[in-house]
Length: 271
Length: 271
Image (cartoon, rainbow over all chains, first blue to last red; front, top):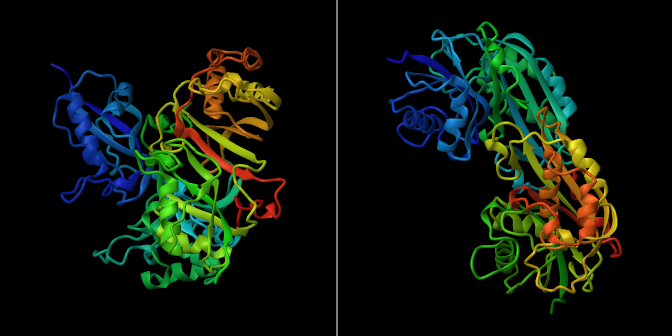
């Protein structure tokens, strides 16, 4: 009899056509299609455990799922075996056998998100699916100055979706780095503004509310120093609007205390 | 009575969902939707004249069309008036009134194309629509060395689609610059290889056949010097395969001898 193994997948997807990551009754989700592909491949009924429940329209370059299987296939072969069973907008980037103790949510993580803003006079059809188009001239230097206030350990209650129902929920998080840069060397344009943030966890809608607030600062409606005042207010009303989902990408999830975590190290530039 | 004016539009589109640019009976094309939007706006039956007949699945950041209208609207307002009438994957970037003599095809042009190759171990769903995914490790330096042979005035018959039926067609073109670079500073990855080429004209499928040949050179199947030998052979059989359409983007069309051509100058970085 085969023994049970835990397999981890790093998954990238274009969230445009999905009702978010997590399985839900009212629409097709990324996880549902991953579960189906893994179940077909193994011949078992598999329900994967996901690391991050990205919202409808949000993208990922590196979400993480695990599942347990008795299939004999070596862990690193799952990526190749699953991709032909997945649609073009969902592809496994890496697969590995991991410790049966590893849980992608109940393990300390370092997550990185990017929010991408296309800041130009007219919309660009070829980048419409993974940027937010913004017509108003945004000052990326002001946005960068504001992003600096986010670094460190702070109470981010002001940047939590107002729909959060548990008032006692812990809202302190540590942000290891936050930056705003303008540039897009790929095509020589300077019309892409990227907000990149890495931390040990994020409240519901936190990156999108931060992005909405940074846009207000970039436009000149708020000052960079207001980012700190908004944080200190500990109230959702103090912050800017929630930026729409299509600009957001979950870039990477790392598990620093989990060995062997090295497999995560190079999945972005995996040549 | 209003006088007739000639209006020029610079148009960007994601070609994924269209049967190419030019109006044709068997499928929806970009030009068809542009014609419809302009006709609705002006109340006239407008058939635009296009500069470049991009193929099905090929994208554009700057294709050019003109049309004649008696509408009173100033030329620079058409972009704003038309975009709400166009789908998300087709957007006017700039509009201007131009000389009635200006014809976007029968005028000397300088065209720039990019062919983008996603060179990594696994497909990236968020970039699937405007790159060619290639699993094999490609040496961009070899490709760059090969691209250099294209610069100058040469007979490019080897890089013309074999379906070209007129054997007497002039196949000499001048390439002002051709380069291959690896890099994608936008997200810190190095997995994007961009072939960029600027010239006074291109034969049918020429950029895609050049891209297919450069990939063979990048993989090591051909040597960089073979690019010159292939060119000298003046035979389609000597060149590599035609790379698929989704990697190709028509970046820009300039009209150096046409005044005022300055309007074209800054449309890429139009902030």
